[in-house]
Image (cartoon, rainbow, N blue to C red; front, side, top):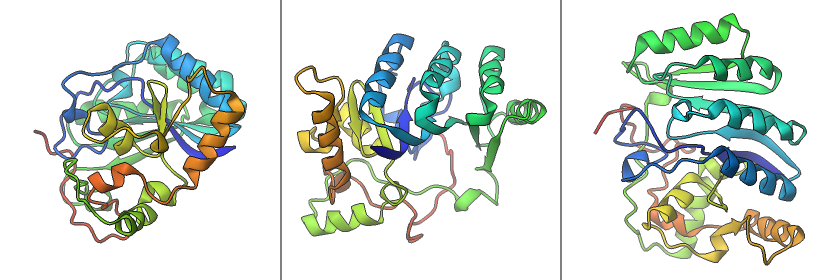
Length: 266
């Protein structure tokens, strides 16, 4: 069983409140945060079901705001034979703590730090990039402010209003989604594994109906590992999910969506 991308979200806390946030942070009145034990339990359950992950992505919120991020990162490497690369996503506006830097440096052959810079705290982003380079830690820098924003900015995926499309229309949305076209952008939290962030966030917020056919319960004590594998294989073969009808469907793969300046604050 192989997944191209798997997202673990240690925290939904964030230092920003972006209008078109792709991970929907401003929709939360609370900020869910995993404990180290919860993250460990999740990783253990996932890697019993999944043999290999291409990118194990640590996302948020802003992961650098988690007070025990270093421990969560270190514990990910218990399973380093089961993922190709660990990607840490950050908005580069929260200082990189020494204990986190130490873990990144220790595992730099399996690490990629993804820096999306919104021009909020340039002195912090410059220092992060300097320290990463100084320690030979692989990183990717994307500029999301000013006139030359990466990919011309963001798209508007909508406000969870149901479109009531025909099934074949939602299948078309699903087929052209960039998440699908890169092998899925699977999200796992609270024991649930979903095709994309919009599905797991929407159901967490009560804005998208939670339907059994749209997710895998990785903690279900009444199903075996083999049964969970079978369910995940079935999920990988679907033609659409419920969340598609609550999405504008503009994920940029067709480049037909209107672009907006990234990181605009509410």
